[in-house]
Length: 183
Image (cartoon, rainbow, N blue to C red; front, top):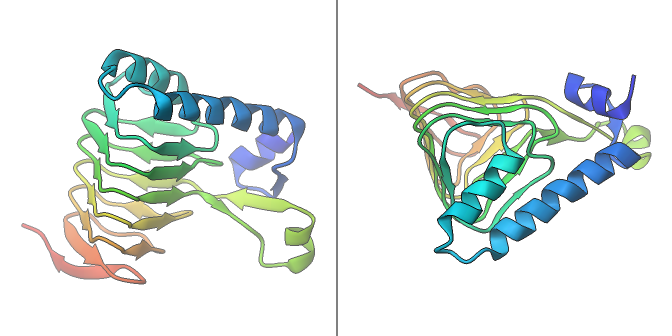
């Protein structure tokens, strides 16, 4: 099994693998081009994003934007990410329709082993993240590996989401917890 196959299956893998390093470099070059594009050159920005993500839909992302690979990010219709969004996509990040991210949101599928020897040797792993339709994630929120956020939910600014959030709720805090149901 290749390191990429291990990565995509959620197993421990070495990120220093030559194939993965080349793919990360490619994505980082696209992020750099995107971040350096004239803000009014909407067509160029969309062209670059379509090279990064698996989406047929237009999406709006404000620079600066960073990701690891891009090809593990699936974005639905009517997506908006404000400035300084980071998506560490060593595993799948599925984002539904009508999702809005405030500035500084981090979506991190990547994690590192608890075992010191494995961590020092450079192993890491990833768990998928799924964000449902019509979700709003407030400024500075962090979504941790393996989390699912249900449709129509709101994540409060500054929240750290470490567990699944059901649909139709307002959730906030560190750790993020349900505050109340939404109508």
